[in-house]
Length: 509
Image 1 (cartoon, rainbow, N blue to C red):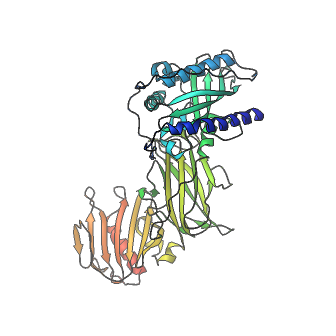
Image 2 (spheres, rainbow, N blue to C red):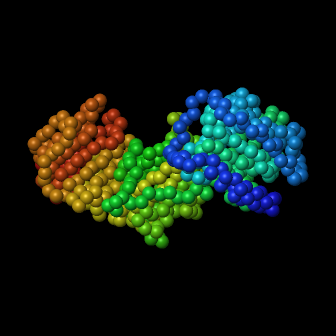
Image 3 (tube, rainbow, N blue to C red):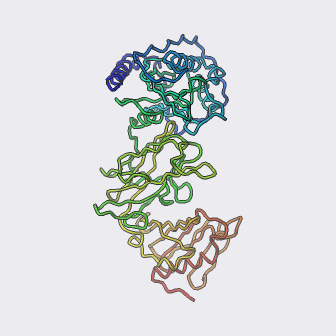
């Protein structure tokens, strides 16, 4: 089988050379290349628009030169070839009702039933899909038909039985090489693996992706993994001033623009040595987190990264593995290998190992998405960056999660406990005017701690933002997230007094 797969790969290379270049010429002078979008826009309805030009006839699936054994009834090579021909013809013609007859109904779907297409090129990211819904897949087919996509058979690579006692020996796995081309894609051979129920003439799962592997993929998911691993890293550089372009706060402790988020701290900062990242025996730093994936995406994810202001490499470890790697593949969430909440969010517990301080970028690749999350690792614990009050003096069991210099005379802190997230900026240049847009109340002497102004939450009345001056430092507090009852004016006062004492300024009783 290895020799056969290598022969197929040689066919792929030769076909790419022969086809890709002429197809590029068909774009025409002045044609704009496809632009990259983070996620593909959802198609509208499952209706296909006829192509303006006549659709060429489909070449039949080549007869395989293989002699499979133990194929179940209804799954002969000829019958499987006819089924694949039917799928390709329906796809190319945009005949959705004809294609619908080849897909199982919602009641017949299995946990492993899904339909996915992934491109390895940046420009082709938006041409992919991952769905567990046959109807959603048909809408995707209609969208691709509007862009003139066609799939031509090139080679029948492999067929094997997946029959077990529970299935009655009625399912097979089929691997074929197709030529994929469209108005927004260069012509390129792709590898496709299908799981078929032959007596029912149904396609239970489908994975299509560019692949350069010389190993026959074991599953449709492996086809997708092969294509994702070929995508190059496209990471940002430092800003013009040399600052780390940290990703924005999203919710809770998570940063990122979605649909994938990394809970780390609202400012995208990790202090090496604690409380999040612990030093290891080899001098590296390791911290645990969980990748959060919104219900909008259920497909596989490839996570890779490196240091932007140096040559350091991120090492990633999955929950069920103790061995760190440069890249981490998260399988499709629908396969039940990660917990999902009632709203459909998936959580992937992982660990990240860093060589030291620096600006780090992580690229997340999915079948139809590519996004980058950037965070900064700071030398020294929060207490080494700024003298802090003892934890027992902070209200609501708040923890100072991160601290970093936000300027020559300012330190920014992130305080957290469960559903309470606070950002506190501390000015070190001495007293100054208290400025707070939207302040609802100001007090010149707030129980002996100095002047303070705050803005009340419109719905619950607790201080949503506050500024104060303890005679040595200026403070600006913003409650980013809080549940009702988790924060109050009394909590604000306790926090003010704790930090004033830490700054060396006595407070009144």
